[in-house]
Structure formats: C-alpha cells, structure tokens
Length: 517
Image (cartoon, rainbow, N blue to C red; front, side, top):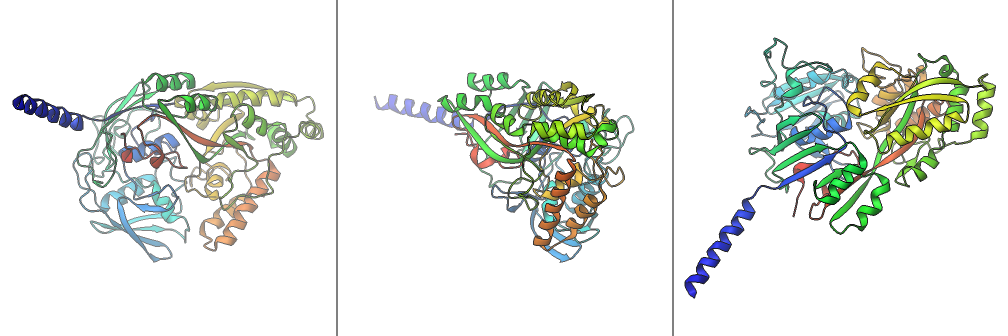
C-alpha cells in the first residue's frame, strides 16, 4: 500500500513537472500581419508593434506615459544639442552578436535614410560613440522631444546587416518594393525571434533563449500570428477557441464578448485620429476653401461615432485629442448640412462634381463602413465619390502614389505630441526633409510650417502649447483635412491571459511581458 502510494506520488510529480516545462503558446489573431521584417521600411502602427516584439528600443513608454529604460539604462543632458545614453551591458542580438554603441549609431544613420522615418528624425544630427556602452545622440538645434523620439530607435545588428547579400545588394538597403535582405531577415535584441513567416498566412515567433530581460514576468514561449482580415471571422475564431488573443474587436461585438464566460474584453483610450485628405493637385475644386469647408460640414462624424462605432470613439474637429498640448477647445465637430450646401453654392459648385476615393478595409476600426458612409454624406451636396477599398497590404503603395482624389489615413502621434501630426500630415510635402510625407492632400500653408518647426525647439511648454493650438485653428479655418474621430483600442482574450498590464495608448502590446495563467 505504501509502495503504491510512492509510485502514484512519483508519477504525479513527473506529470506536474512536465506541465510546468511545457511551452506556452499564444495564438494571435490580428487584422493583418507585419508587411516586412525590416523595422525601417514602413512607419505604421503594425510595424512599430512588431518592433517591440522582435527588437527593443533604447527607451519606451510605460502605461502611464512616463519614459522607462530599455536598452539604455540611464541618460543625461550634456548640452543643448546632446544627450548621452548609457547602454545595457550583456545584451545579445538574435544572431549572437553583442549589442554595443556602434549598433545605436548605425541604426540612427539608417533611420535618417528611410523614406518613412527621415522626416521624424530630420532634427537629428546623428550619434557618436563614446565607448562600447556609451553613445551621444545629437540634434541640429535644441529639440524638446529628443527623449521621446528615442522610443523609436530600435537598435539593429550592425554586423549582421553589413556587407552584401547573394544578389550583391547591401544588406542594410531599405527597399519599399522588391527583394532585400532586411525584408526577410531579422536580428534584434527583442523577446522573440521570427522562426517562420509566410506573409499573409502565418508568422511564428519563438522566445529568444538569451533575452536580456530576465526580470520580465512574461511566460509566453511562442506566438503564432494568423492574419484574419474579416472582423466577424476574427471574433468567431476567438469565441471558438481557434485563437487566444485578437485585435481589433469590432464595436458591434463588444457586448457579445462581455457576455461570453470564456473570454475578456479589454479597451484602452487611443489618440489615433481618422481622417480623409483632399488632393489639391488632382482636383482644382479642392483648392477652393469653401468647397473644403462644405465637405467638412457635410460629414456627420458624431453620427458615425454613434451608429458605426457604437460609441467607442470620440468625434473630432481637429488633430489633437484632449490632453495633448495642441488641443484647441474652439475646434469642435461642425456637421451642418444646410451650411454645407450654402458653401457649395457660394463656391460656384452647387451642381457638384465627381471624384475618386480610396480607403483601406482592414487597417482602422470599421474603415470601409466609414468610407461608405462618407460617400453617402457627400452625395447630399452633389459630390459623387467613386470609392475603392482594399487591404492595407495593398493600400499604402496606392496611398503613396496618390492614385485617388480623396484618401483615408489614420494617425497616432509617434511622439505622443501634437506637433507630430502636422509634421507628417499637414506640412508642405518635402521629399528632401521628409516633412509632409503623408500629406496626400498636398495642403501647403507657410504659417503652419513655420509654427510647426518653431514648436520643435520651443522649450517653454506654455508658449509651445500656444503655437500648437494656433496650428489647429489655422487648419480648422482652412478645412485643411476632414476629421472623423479618435478611435479606441480594443482587444479580446481568452480567460487567463493577463492583457491589462501590457496594453497602452500607442496600441503596441508588450507581448514580451505577457503572462498567461
């Protein structure tokens, strides 16, 4: 009897140890997968989220929006143009190469060459190596947002990306379309290594065995990412147990998830503004301010929030959400169909005109439905819009080529600051500096440019806020773009996934710290 008890106890211990040792896999269902493995090829929310999984930034935002150390353990201001960063020792890249200051300098230089990132890093002079674990980052002029910008420096493995590939192309080449080494190879310092990738089908990331952050609570050994474009299919996959974690959750399914005993719904306030841009180079009508004002007045964005977003967004009249330095209380939503029609008449376009529009159908929450609703609203002021929607994997190339008269874009400030909106969306497009990189409306106002650049170097926060609010007023009066709303972030997860601590306003879930019970 005693012997049998010992055998049973021994088996129980073996089984228990086996369960502890078993790998924890999270099946992740997203609306789309990362378009590339190169973190500098595209400046987008999806790619920045990927960067946090596979690479690691110098510093990052905590959930309360304070700055916390990552690959940099501390920093100090040397002078008005220089900040010194002291780097974490003992960090390895996925290739096995050691992480040093040389990799930070290499990465910043590469960022300044990226079509998508060079506008963001235009104020930066570069980085100089002090020693293996100390690096000075310098700006061309005093720059209030230097530390915030370092949340977007994800050091790349300079040795790994040196030399040429099999075709003779430099391994560090940044290529939008066509093959390149960095598009399909990665060596970061992050918690996960990409071990399998079939774009549009599946991506597998395994926990990096030599990951430096041994204090992380994260216990997910493997992430299997499956892109699920259709909202209904994505929600069904979670409810059926085919996946463990999804984002975004469509607003119409919030109550369904809240009632299901096997899953949890998580939401987080976001600062992403959803807009449309009116291309003034393609359509002479859009150069007429009263026409642009008529379009803004014809858009019932509060109705869109209520009926399409089910109350899970905030109608916007400007770029800056409440809480941002540039938020201007005077710039409110202004739906007024009667005034819209009057403005069209005053502009000489009472009979309207016909134009084209493109929008994504899987990038923003209900993006296709929002675009379709807008088509109906503009029809009421005799503007016939021929709409074409497409997956985001195709959309951005079309957006960059400005193939349509009206184009949709959402933007979350990369610096969690109002200035970033105008730098990319509203400044006069300039290929040399990168400013106005995503201004497909080709709106150009010298005063907006002047104030946006002046705000970059203004260290008096009250004066800076006044500048940013003035920018919002000019854009509002000019109807420089058409604002819809700021969308919230939403996540669905099976019970036992502790998602609340790893989500944030940037919508970059820190999966490296995720715990599954």
